[in-house]
Length: 200
Image 1 (cartoon, rainbow, N blue to C red):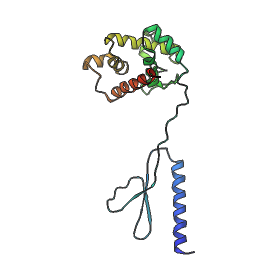
Image 2 (image 1 turned 135 degrees about the vertical axis):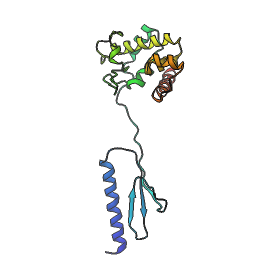
Image 3 (image 1 turned 180 degrees about the horizontal axis):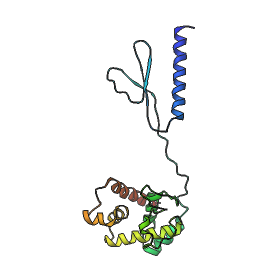
Image 4 (image 1 turned 180 degrees about the vertical axis):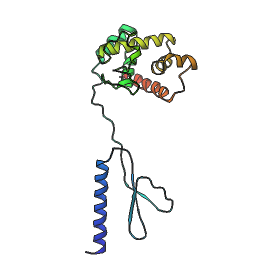
């Protein structure tokens, strides 16, 4: 077998090995770079650091878009009823549900918030919530709480959303959206969904 055929066979084997490795590895976004040195030896890495070696992208990893299997219209009737009952804009209430749980009635956050509107256990009693995973109960309790924030902050939607996320005390303290990255991103996300639902 000639040197050229051997080299080609090695390239094919290495490529196959890398593809298999990427297939079975934990799904993280990472490009694979290759460098061929003066002896024809191939070097692979996902983090080229050497300025001497001229690494080139060998395999381009593309992030896969997240697809939600949940039906975004599944709770429209319950959201509409709660919006009417508490005097809240329907698109806004739906936007909160989307941002909080992505319409997953069994969602539980790392902090313990539960259900479609991610209500904390310490708020169950005062919001009349007995089963946090019951969609109707959860949406009504969340709508009631948001309306309280809305009235407390005199109809200012951004502050009301910030209070829903970070608590009213934090908003009172800063007199604006608290400088917490999570809360700032949350408010932006809800307002984006609100705009989209309002213009459907």
